[in-house]
Length: 124
Image 1 (spheres, helix red, strand yellow):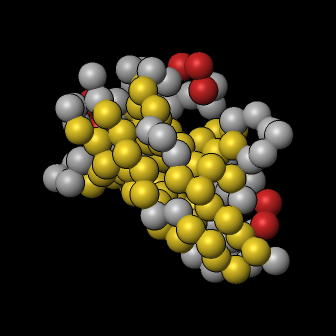
Image 2: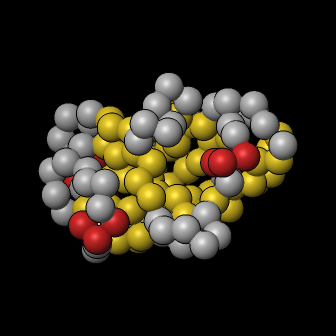
Image 3: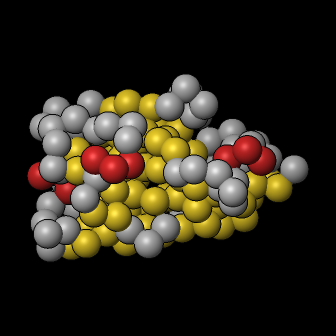
């Protein structure tokens, strides 16, 4: 099975940028559909974006489309989430997750492996 560790979170002002990393060990990220989720206090975990296993096609939630970009570096066995033009509403703990499916799902229950999360705080 794969182990996932997120990094890159922090405090940023509105309009700023952050790049999150999710480094995998045990198995390669290219062997899974991968997803980024986030969870704000008092709210349910929500899908941010995903990347398919084979083609590397990416999918995004409407709330982040045009601002966030996912990528995968197979040589480094790492998944990235570039976040630009951040808004206070983006404040949350961000998690990466791996699914045995070919395509990423918006449902958290379809992901078998999760990282511990990294905090992103956007100040107004």
